[in-house]
Length: 317
Length: 317
Image (cartoon, rainbow over all chains, first blue to last red; front, side, top):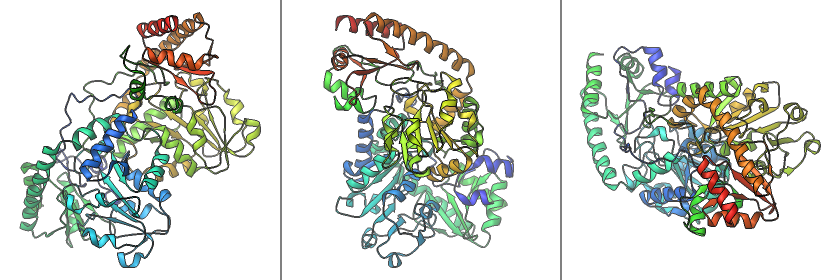
């Protein structure tokens, strides 16, 4: 089961291992919105030219408006994953990270150690808000007391703008924030993320990325999606509704859902491993964790039908 | 004119500066194939899911076959630009680079110095083959005599596979090669490149990039394009024909074209700055160089009509 405890995704590997009995596979192994921003069929994507700097600037402005940040503090990335790994070059060691959390946080800095806010001292501290996989949230003020560089991974913050510290970033504060496009907008295949930080930090990221950090598709789709206030508002409401419905199904099967991020729920049960296998044999992929075999994370089913399929699989085993 | 001596591209800035008199603008400022691989309108691009590892492996196999390399030595990148900059972390300093060449080569390693092969000693040496902007080529054997790590930027080698050392990469050789997808295939907006190196080097690149280095579009388009042997063969022939026609037009205007890369030509003239301005006022963007004001690089016009437009602009001034 090692393959599935590493990161979410990996339906192809799951099909090879578990077969295609109840195909199509239902991928609940990630925290990606199953009802994505609808990419218009006629959206103009210029694959030919190098992405123009004015397009990149427009993308960063649209994203900054959505984040509530100043555009001069925002830099587009070809996926947050790469950005997190670059942060290890840009920010000072030693580093500490909240654990358990997103696996990459422990790989950003050589010699990084898990720590609480109280234990982190002056170290660069990496924390996710909301946290992944358990959906725990931190009040903004509680994080700002950290004395060293504070790196907040807000990959799952889009549903709840009141959690974000994007607007608190300034040249005077040792605060760096990562945002992900693909999760809330449901378009993880695009590979688009953002780092928000003091201008000196942003300049270092730009130097590491070079002149054309993101694709023409990221620019075209990112601008249109971040500017789509109506879709953003209705998706926030829809995610809340669907997450409540998922909680109700889980509760009916004796599984208490943890966390308050609507894109995923964590359940804790002695039967987690058996549950993972049982669901996989019914072509439903969830996310187990090697460091806690009692945990299973479930992404949000995107429709009544998918939720009913999960309900049935939990009932019949 | 500083904006245009930095990198190619930048039509938006050129429009602002020179106006739109003879619009549409003809962009001859880059070395991107003006007749791209035709992306099928119905090509399935899964923007929703994280790119599956099997898709990434299939892309790297298709690219390796095209390069004549072993797939286990090939790693996909979200653009060669980022890969070149990561090489400064992965390979040892001190470093030297052939000059003049692609500007980024001097930015990859702190303290890198321009040097010839004879001057480079045991340093990590970066060289482009063919070179950009002058189109000079190096015989493969002449490069392999270098004693230190050798980094070859083969961004413009697709038209002439006999130039490439991709097949010479092995775990025993201090040889790393970069390839670009966007130039020969004319799809620079995709942001896709590759690094080819010893497995230990490839592992370090993968650690820096994380699990999802390239987009779903890069996987879908890259696989289909690298597997399109008929298009590749006819494009090689077409580029040779068009480059010869460009040379003939330039010669008629007293401009001797240098280099043997069909995607661009370098001309050397006392009138280079005036020529840049004159063409720009007719909405034709070319590429000047701050370090040699006598140089102007012209990308390949993609049609008879575009070549005729250049011819007219050179005639009328």
